[in-house]
Image 1 (cartoon, one colour):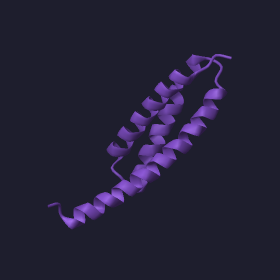
Image 2: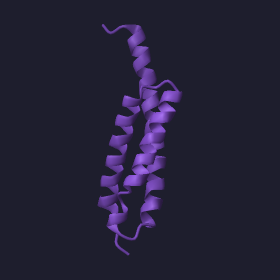
Image 3: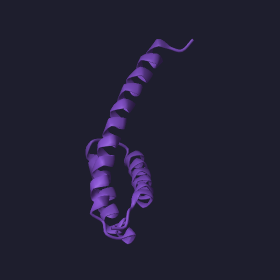
Image 4: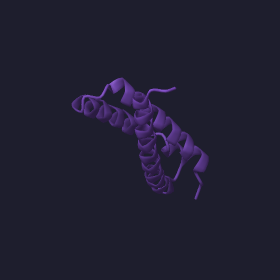
Length: 93
């Protein structure tokens, strides 16, 4: 039998995951808007922008006392996933 505290905490994690899914849906809609404004596939990957994003995440993580290794790994994965998404959904005008 699982510890009642663990069950309660896992239920809270499940609720938080639902919030993450809603945020991902909102983020995907914004990415769709950006993608509509890109004229060429080569515009999908913006290394300078990625560098700025990761730098900002690292700073904000430290400021909020979050392990930056965790957040950087999450953001790198998210960026990679959205790049893949953009390539799959790019439509030449």
